[in-house]
Each structure stands twice: as C-alpha cells, then as structure tokens.
Amino acid sequence: MAKVLMKGNEAMAEAAIRAGAINYFCYPITPQTEVAEYLAKRMPDVGGVFLQAESEIAVGNMLFGASATGKRVFTSSSSPGISLMQEALSYMAGAHLPCVVLNIMRGGPGLGGILPAQSDYLQATKGGGHGDYRLVVLAPSTIQEAVDLTFLAFDLADKYRTPAMILGDGMIGQMMEPVEFPEKVTTYNSHPENWAATGAKGRRPRIQKSLFLDPAALEQNNIALAKKYEQMKREETRCELYKVSSANSVLVVSYGTMARICQTAIDELESRGVSVGLFRPISVFPYPEVQLRTEIDKPNIKTILTIEMSMGQMLEDVERVAGRTKPVKFFGRTGGIVPSPEEVVAHIEAVVKQAKG
Amino acid sequence: METQSSPIFQRPTTLADVVTHYCPGCTHGIIHRLVAESIDELGVRERTVGVAPVGCSVLAYNYFNVDFLESPHGRAPALATGFKRLRPDMIVFTYQGDGDLASIGMSEIIHAANRGEKFTTIFVNNAIYGMTGGQMAPTTLPGQITTTCPIGRNTADTGMPIRMCELLSTLVTPAYLERVSVHSPQHIVRAKKAIKKAFQYQIEGRCFSLIEVLSTCPTNWGKTPGESTEWLADSMIPYYPLKAYKDSGVEGQSA
Image (cartoon, rainbow over the protein chains, first blue to last red):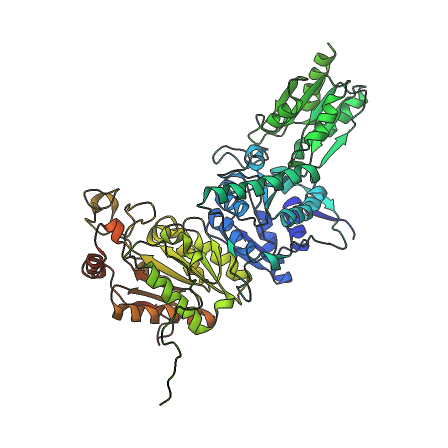
C-alpha cells in the first residue's frame, strides 16, 4: 500500500479500525480529540459502534462491558482523562479482560497544560489504578511506529487478556508524517468463545469479575496476573539501539518523541567527532531490562544519561537496571517544553566530557 | 380418577440452587426471584447477561443462572451500555442498590437513561447502605437514623431524599419507569408484572426501562422483619409513591 500523509491521532485511529476494533467510546480532551473526530466518520464504514460518553469514568466502564463480549475494544484520551479511566482498567486487569487505550500525554499534574510531555510514565508502567497489576505499555517515536504498535497492542491485549496502553506524547498525536498500513492484517485469536459473556447456553454461567472475598482465591488471581507479567518480560520486551558502538562512552536512554530528538542530537555530535549511542525502549512495560543491562555492562560505557520530557520518571527504571555499577545522570524538560536538539547536544556533550575527565 | 404430579410451584431455572447470604427478612431474595421468573417466562435465559453492582447485591451473580459482569461501584449502566451496544441481540439488565445507583452512579444512570440504552435496570431502594453496615444513602428518609446520621438525617445539612423515578421521568427518552414494592403479597404480584414488562419492552427493542423496588433492610434499620415491612409501608411509600412514572406502552406516552 502506498504511503499516506496522516496526523498521528488519525493514523492510530485508522490502525485500530484495521486491527479489528469495532467500537470506540470517547470523551473529548486535547491533544487527542482528532481520534474521536476521525472515528465518528470512519466507524460507520465498518459497522462499528461509536459512542460519546458522559465522562472518562463512563468510557472506561463502557470499555469493560464491551470487552466482556469478546470483541476488540478501544478508547483514547489524554492524561487527566486517563486518570479517570484507572478505575475500569484496574477492574479489567483483575477480570482478565483485554482492551487498548491510547494515552496522548500532556503536561501535568492536575489540569497541567495541553502541550506534549511524558508525565504519565510511572502511572502507565507501575499499575496506574489500585491493586497489584500492570498494563502492557508501548511507546512509539514515529507515526509509522505508532501505527505498527497499535496492531501489536491489540494482539498483546488479546494474547494476555489484559488492558494494553499506547503511551504517546502530544507530539506523536499532533504531528503529520507519511505512514503505510499493512496490506494484510493477521490478528491474534484469543478464542473469546471460551471466556466471553455470550449467554449461558449449554454451559455454566460465566462471571467477569475482580471480586474474590476468599483471600486464598484472591491471592490465586494475583499469582495468575504475576505469571502473565513474568511471561511478558520473557517474550514481549522491545527496544531499538541507535549508533551504539564500542566508541561510545555515554549511553543515552530515552523513549518516544524525546528519543527522536536525541537521535538528531547524536547525529550532530557524530559530525563533530563525538560518538554517543542511544538505547530506546519501545515496550516500557515490560521494560527491556536484559537488553539495557547488556548495553550498560559494556566496558566502554562510563555513564548513562536518561533524557525525558518529565522531571525523571523512566529514570527510576534505568537506575534500577544499572544498580550501583555506573553513574546514571538525568536531563529533562517538562510542562509542554520540548527540548531542542541543540539543547540536548549541549547537555550530552557536557556529560561526555565529564565521563572522559 | 387420574392424578397429575406436575409441580405447581418450583425454583425458576434462572435462579441458582444455592444458600443465600442475604440477612433474614431482607427482600433482595424476593426481587431476585421475580427477575428470575420473568427471564424464565420470557424464554431469554440463554441470551441474558446481568450486571451486578457494589453493595449487598454485589454477589447477585451467584444467584442467577446467566452470564454476569461485576461492575465497579455505580458504573453498571456504563458496563451494560458497552455490552448491549455490541450485542443488541442479548438481553441485558443491571441490578443496583440505592447507594450504587443514586449516589456514586448518578451520572451513569442518568446518561444511560437519556441515551435510551436498550437494557433494563432493577433499582432496589432500601433507603440505606447495607453492605457497609448501615450508612446514610441519598434515599435515606428525613430523621431516619443511620450510622453516619446517628441522630437522624438532618435535611438542612444533607438535603431531601432523591426520588429517582421522578427525576428520570423528566427525560424524554426512557421507555418505562415504575416504582413498586415487595412488602406484601399483593405488592409482590404488582412488582412482578412491572419487572416482566420491563424485560418484555427490552425484547421489543424499546428504550431504557427502570423498575424501582422499595425493599427492606431489617439488619441496618434495627427492626424485625415484621416491623420493617410496616415501616416501609408507613414511612417509605408516602415519600416514594408507587406508580408508573412513564410507560411507552400507554397511549400518549411516546419513547
């Protein structure tokens, strides 16, 4: 299929349709409202359900009810709206129900602002709502990758019967780039006939629930969830290395839009004869720990530099993986301020000098 | 003379054969039975999905031989919306108490009703939070004693009890809103008619129906079951009149 020029929000909406999502519940919030506007027109083409709800709390719970049918379900929002969906996401994780949620992050806390930020990393990767659970979380850095990860998110949600999140920032949602959609889409079959609520015909009733008043049963449910997360850690970690070589003394760790700006900065540094490598996590839960540790352990690496559009959230994962073996430094801007490549170049250069010193 | 041994009264197929967790004198059991009988008589058990609330009836899913979803507190109408929109061929009902529906779930029920979602809500109003041990609900009567209004509900501080059927009847879309009670055999017969009609309307594809059922809570009211039915009749019904507030099946009332 030929490439088409699309805005990130619209491209991810189109990808969700092609991945087989036949319903979408929404509540308007900047900077992701184009997803809703696009699907309001597009959903009728595939005979799907488009419904604007009264709140993000209702959106999350409509998603819960819709997911119980066994069909592919989808919604999108931005930071404050995602906070309101945490209730339903916790219940769905507990009830082992799949769904895909797109979070186009803006600056916070509170109402914050409407410009791009990476302010919800901890909320997305450490559970978000109450209870002992995680989401699958994928972080695209280009519109093409956002499209590809939308397909993957639906498959992983179905494979593990869990809520999955695409964690993009406002830049990913608002930017336009050429994208290509796959000609043929093959989707993971979770065999909903074995678990969905379809009517108790010729079988015992099925209960989609997260309530277990017997502590032993509740512990078993938590153990079942933990097993899924362990399997994800073995099978689903994804990352990309950029200009990683034995000439690097500093390893930059960055994701999403910020990683892309780091690539531009690394190219600039290379033209000045400074060799720096980038480690870009694509799955931020499960976090690509093994791959990152391998890079950090290389003898040429003296310092690790985490760069984010936040005050330091993924930093906690990088520090955890690095342990006390090597120093982990941090640079971040937030509030909707996207660092320029020049700003990043200057910062990396200073860290490289220190590492050599 | 030929004798026949066919049963004249038995447990509805839709009602599970299990021990109840409800307190002695609580009328949830009667309401469960009326729902189960209606589903049996309409022949829709195998394509029915229930949505349970948070509250005493959180375990409703243990008592019905149908598929069930267990909702977060107050959100049952949102779950039912999501489910029914994708499976319009299924019969969907929510079963919610007054704390669940009239307090934390007020937004969800109003908007589901206003959109005319094609499911049925059984709203059980016993004027108190039962599961958590008897706290004030939006439906608690003026002066009624609960653990969070120990000297009686002071309406100067907390407002007057919310009448859900009256409130929802201002909406254009709902197909059927009726308040019934189950404190006497005659009232149970009328309640059954209303509940069955609400499911019948859903089968016909009509918009949203809600049946409010006045119910007892002897444990948290601090009364015997007998005193409870009397209190319901004497104190609740005057404030919560029993009648159909909206019925699209009646001429002149469209939905």
